[in-house]
Length: 67
Image (tube, rainbow, N blue to C red):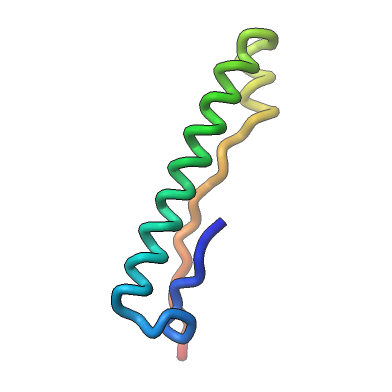
């Protein structure tokens, strides 16, 4: 999940900074959860199965518009 950071939605400034930090914090939390699940799952299945079944989310940087 990411929080909208465009100026039209946040009025810029501290609101944008907060949303960027909140998005990064949520990503970090999700990565921690996935890692814990992978470690638990690896007790019962192969590393390949873990890698195929529990893939971490991929962070995507989005660019601004042309506007």
